[in-house]
Structures are given as structure tokens and as C-alpha cells.
Length: 378
Picture: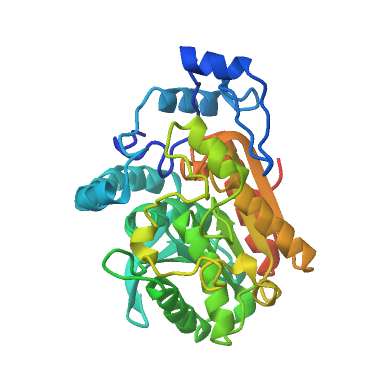
């Protein structure tokens, strides 16, 4: 499938790059990498080949993505805001073809509904058992809290997961920035979850999302805790973490690999999510970044984190996993080498199918179902 011109590394592209050495870079490479008293290292340029662990299909995909340029890789938020209407329209047009292809590979039915006044898409597998029909997964789409929809990025996750698990998946059209600000999305997810609780037992409900949707999964769990709602049986934070800022080593390394904006000396980096969070948000507030609250994390259900070594969220996902484990919670972390942010949305790659099987096994197990044949270990 063909990615839109602006999306290649920002959203679902497989990420890879090779750094070219200039004369100045060569001088830096020759100099010793002396750390500052604060432990900051100046890293010499180096060539990064495509991972030898990738499948042939993934290798070809990465090589094709490297050849494309991303005009927004170094765009500031003012530029993003100016171009946002066109970007949104482009996303939805591009997704139509992707979703059409998915529906030829997975036997599902999709219907539009409203749950507590929130628009959702219900994705129903055509073949399933009565027990599978009594389970529900709630999907939260990605798009930096400013773009995408249940119809586009939402169905790219919901369709294969519904087909592979046999469960109903509800993809949520939550409110986004800049038209709406935090915590509008969390409130919408809570409204949908309250509606779900009138139809399903909490032990039969799972919650998951990718990228912004993965962040929103953690934020929603924190919101459920605040509202004293029963927790779902399991959660999936894919290409995301419990820290909405995505800090740590990978934030720097992946930006350098992708020739994207690097954080400044204080670790600050303008991100499109700022158009949703605004200027006054406290990123250490557990309703924004639950990783910073022991009390909130202790209420998390079993959690699945999926990421990759060329994804900016890798460090934050690893930190979220370690925090959950340290607090005695159940957490599974799966990392794929050589791939980038949201790689599993390109479902034709063998690595993406692995991630989808991991997801289907995880939710089936925690929602009290046998592992479906489509997700069985190879």
C-alpha cells in the first residue's frame, strides 16, 4: 500500500535511515566522545543498516520508506496547524483504500453506532463462538490527538483484531485537538466504557490503542480510577507508553535516525499532541502520564506493550513496563528489532502478523477464552 506524502515516519511508516558523513561530522567522529559532568555524550555520526533480523518483506518495506522524504519531519506546530485540514482529509482518503484491502482479508461487518452520545464503529467478526460474542474490546485510534478517526486508523487495528479474536471491537471517535482540549478524549472513552458496562461484565472487556490511542489507553485507565469505575480485564498500549511525552534515550536516538526534530538541552520537543494538551498541562499529572503515580499504576489491569527499536516511544514503553512490574502488576513488553512506530498497522508484514497474534492471545487469555486458531503459536 502507498503511504501519503507526509506520513512516512510520523505515523505508521517503518523507520530507518543512514547518516551521511560531512566534513564537520568527520571531525566530530575523530574526536573522543567525552561526556559532560551531567553525563551528556556527543555521539559521532554512524551508518545504520537495515536490521538483519527483518523478514524479506519488512526489509523491502523499510528500504522503500527510507527512499521517501517526510516534509513534516522537522515541521513546527504552527506549520502543522496550518496544514492540518489538508492532512486530515488526506489521511481519510488514503485510509479508504487500506480499509478496503483489509476487508478482503478479514471477514467482518462494520456498523456506525452511538454509545452515550459518542460516535463509534462496531466491528463484528462473521464467524465466532457464543463465548467470543460475549466479549468486547474497545479500540482507541492514533493520530497525535489531532488527526485520524475510528474510520481510518481505528479500523486498521479493529478489523484484524476482531477477526483474529472473534470478539466485538468498538472503535471510538473521541474528541481531538485543537478544537477540543484535554481531558475531552478521556471523558469520551469513559462515556463509551460506561455504556459498555451496561452490556458486558468488566471481566469481559479489554481496552487498547496505538500511538495517541495507546497513550489514551493509559490516560483512560487513570480516568476510570478517578471515577471509581471497575477496571477492564486487560489493556494494550501499542506504540505508546504511560508517559505522554515519550522521553528517554529513544526519543533522541530515533529522532537522529529519522532526521527529525531533536529535543533541546532541557529535553523539550514541540509535538503535535501539544495542539490537544495545550500550554498549561502538567505532564506529571497521572491523568496525563499515569506512569508517575504508584497509586494509579497499582490499579492497572494486565497490560500489553508493543513497540520497536526504531520507535520514539521505546524507552518510555520500557519504563512503563518496569514500573508496572516493580509495583506487582502484570505487564508484557514485546519489542521488534529494526521496525518503527506503529509498524503493526502494516498488517501484511510477517512481523505485524506476529504482533497481531500476540495481541489476540493476550486478550483471549485475560478475557477468559481459549486462544483462537488464528492466533495459535507457530
